[in-house]
Length: 171
Image (cartoon, rainbow, N blue to C red; front, side):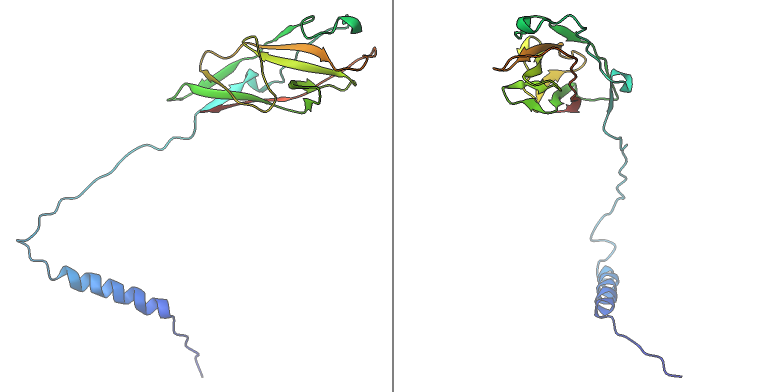
C-alpha cells in the first residue's frame, strides 16, 4: 500500500518557532527576572438600545379641511408626537435625521403623493433638512413639527399621503 505524504512548509516553521521559544525559556535563570501574572477583566456590553414611539408608526393627521389656497408653510402646522426611550446609555449625545424623498422645491420637505405638495419638517422651530443629522442631548428630544408646503404649481383637491423614516443614533 502506498501512502502519499505532503510536506506542509508552514508546519515546520511553526514547530521551529515553538521549539525556539521552549529552548529560549531555558536560558533565563531563576535569579535574573521576577514574574507576576496579569489578570484582565471587564464587561462587554452591546450598544445601548433606543426605541422610537414604542416601535409603532408615527402618524400626523392633517384632516380633510385644508384649503389649497391657504397652504403656505405656516397654516396647518401640526406637532409630531413621538416617544424616545433609550436604556443603558453612557453618553447622552445623540443625533436624529429624517430619511425620505425630499421635495424638489424644498429640501426640508417630504414629497407627498400629490403634485406640488410636500410636508415640511421642523425641529425646535427650525427647518429640518431631509437626510441631515440633528444633534441633541437625551432625554431632551427635539420638538418636531410638520406643515404642508406647496411648490410653484397649483394644488388640486384630494387626499394625500407622505412617508419618511425617523432615525436616531449616538454621536
